Every structure is written in structure tokens, then in C-alpha cells.
Amino acid sequence: MATQTPFMFICAPADPTKQDTVNKLKDKIASKSNDHAEVFPFSLPEFKVGTLDQLVVLSDDLSKTDLAAETIATKIADNMRNLLNNDVEQWKTNLSVNEKSIDAYLRGFQWNSMKYRTDKGLRELADLIVQEVNQIDALMKTKMTAYTTVKSALQGIQRKQTGNLAVRSLNDIVKKNHIIHDSEYMTTLIVAVPKSASNDWLNKYETLTQMVVPRSSEKIAEDEEYALFTVVLFQRVVDEFTHKARENKFTVRDFKWDVQAMQLERKQLAEMGATEREQWTTLLRLCKANFGEAYACHVHIKALRVFVESILRYGLPPNFQPMVVKAKPKQERKVRDLLNRHYAKLAGVAGGTASAEDAQMEENLQALIGDKDYSPVVMFYINPILQ
Image (cartoon, rainbow, N blue to C red; front, side, top):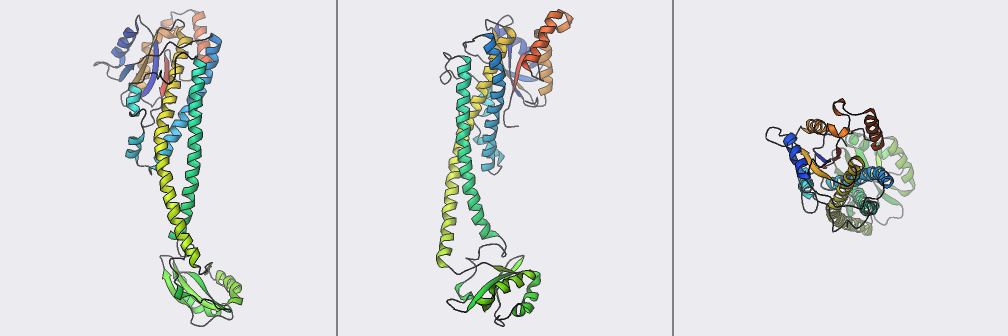
């Protein structure tokens, strides 16, 4: 996670009490003289810890599930934004967690003990949250695919209604009196002609092939690019006429007078439009609800990481204080630097007082955690989505 996000979870040992830890940090970054951030302490339950080996494996797994959960929550938020046609204000209004804004949820974060009971082990809790996130992801993929299919079909129909005269549906343009009906030998073709070539068409159409009825062409419509002409000819020369017309950049449209087909097209457009609106409404509601659930899962996974890493760094019994830190605008890097200096003694090498053995242990710990943004205090950035 890039350091540009203002939110982070941190956890520091009691110094000497948990409240002292909070007060000392506030003096450094959230006081009148050092107004760089806000600090919100929270508590974590007394989880069943397990063995050190189990914690090390779980730490690695949680880093992966953390990223996966964040990706799923972010994807749902992006889908919602697309559904709202990139209306940022509407998007912000709909992005909520437990009926709170993301900002309020993070500020007041507490472990959901009703949903994630502490009589379960850390691994079991992690698996439970991952299962929930995956179920949400599977549901949203299914619903998004269904909606995308309907929307694409609707857009295909709409394109036929709104394109230029060379491609759009002609059912609402060609009238019954424009064409010959029920003739055994004669037929009417509908031809789209570039407007700049209208005179060329009128001069050439009678001689493109034999068996074209003289003076039978009539302009029945035009748009910014094309004019639409009718022409009457014998059915036996339709293919040849179509070929010759194409050579002259005149487009013979594939059109047959079919009342039932016209009615069916209008019905399909109306039904597809209604289906798309219905699915849009349902999908927006699902995005709103499932974003909140997925984001809460993501933050709970982050909280598990805080607990596990704190045990690995600070040892047992657990006696540390987790906190949410929100940096003031443009103060993110400043806050991080202040945190690193404030908690430098936790690294075991501050001021050159640590032994070589301590330094090697710290180096090994950094390698174990594998975090390029390593800090002497347990620290994890939180994606607030709205940035």
C-alpha cells in the first residue's frame, strides 16, 4: 500500500500502560504543538494464539488474503462508480460500511465479536472471513456478467436505432408506400448514398445494370452523412446491381418489409430496456450492500494482521495497544517519519546501543516480515477507497 493513504493501523506495546501509549503518541503527532494526525485507539479480543510456527505461517497467508480482500472491495466500488456513470457525489453517498461513511467506520473501528466470535482460533477466523469475501466476489461476478450481457444486447439494439443511415434500422424510416409489394418480378431496393455523392447516384443508378426502372429513385430520408434512396428494378438483377452499387460506394441496405419483424424489434427494445433498468437497480443495491460487507472483511483481516504481527514482534502475553491513525492532508510522509522516530527504540538498534546479536535478530525479523515499508512499530496502511 502506498504511503499516500491517510489511514493506517498501528500497534505499540503498553508504555507502561496502554493509555500511556496512546497519550504519548498523541503528544508526538496529534497535539496542539504537533497537529499532524488524529489517533483513535481500539481494542482487539484475546484471540487464541496457537504456536509460533502457526503464527509465522498465518502471517504470510494474511498478507495475501489482505490484498485479495482489498482488491475485491475496490472492484465492487469501481463497478458501483461505473453504474452511476462516474457521478462521484452519488458514488460517495452510496459507499458505506455498516451504514457509516468509510471515514467514520475506520475512526470508530471495533472488532465485530458477534460475527467473528473469539472462541475460534486465529486460523479459523481468517478462513471464515476469506470464505465470506470469496462468496461476495462470486455473487458479484455472476450479477455483473448477467448485467453486462443485457446491457450489451440493449446497446446493440440501440445502435441499430441511432447509427447513420448506412447501418441503422430502417423499420421506423421506410414506409409502406415507399416499396413495391407482392410483385412476382419487380422489387424495391433501399440504398444509402453519401450525401456528397447524391448527384452522382442520380446520374448513374439507371445504368449500373440493365432492367432498372428509369426515374424510379426517390429520396426518402437523410442525415448528416447519408441520403436514403429507393430504386425499382427487376429481381433477377438485384445481386448484380448490389455489386455495381458497392463499386461506386453506394450501400444497398438489407431490408424487407415485414410488419411482424418491425413489431418484434420495438417489443425487444422495450423489454430489453425494462430488463436493463431492473437489473441496474438490483446491481446497484447489491454493490452498495456487498461493498460494505467486503470492506468490513478487508479491515478485519487487517486487524488480524495487526494482532499476529504484534505477537511476533512484541511477544506474549499480548500487552499492546492497537490504534487507527489518520494523517492530516499532505502530512502522510511526515506522520510516518514521526512514528518511526517515536518508536525507534522498538527496532532494538536505536542510538547504537543494541548488541550485534540484537541487530542480527532485527535484520532477520525484517526479512521474515518481507515488507519493504518496514517500520519499527507494527504498521499497516488502509485503503480508504475515496481519495
